[in-house]
Length: 237
Image (cartoon, rainbow, N blue to C red; front, side):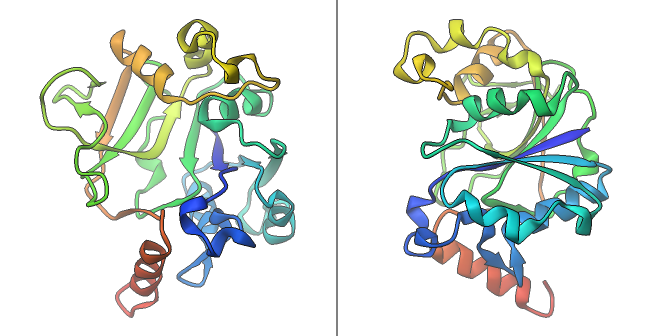
């Protein structure tokens, strides 16, 4: 399986830290956030990883090299001055990701999840990792049913999407019809989010998920980064 790490965001909520460093390269526990993902991906048997970049993208190659230190082959894709968002980022990376299902990870989260617990092939178009709702996102995102199905319709308790999932390329097959006539869809290359495609697939019963009850942090502010760094630097990790 191949993987894509989203690393193109501007990290505006993390300023001033991200004025000179892209968010995935900020240090936590003595190493860049993205390095934690690369270690876990390699341990799970992933051998090729695509990293999409935009803001301060020139810093990734010197920081990561070609991936051999993790036993990986890295492909860096520069999206230009404007990030293509999550859906556009996947679409832009598909030539490198290929025709098989691939793993997607947000570059600005940290987790102790074993990526080896994820399915190599999702039952439908996507398999999502969901976590308990953090304080900054109390309402959650999606409903995880007892049978493993994930959807966005109903009054049941919701969990938060962890920014980690396994996707089939087919989730993008009809992206123009789902997204509609937006400025981003007309751009070259297209710029659009993944959420509408996920909700469309959920409506067809084609999204499954799992609840990760371990550690997970959305490293979205300097304060949360400092908290994570202190936890990882402590004797108990």
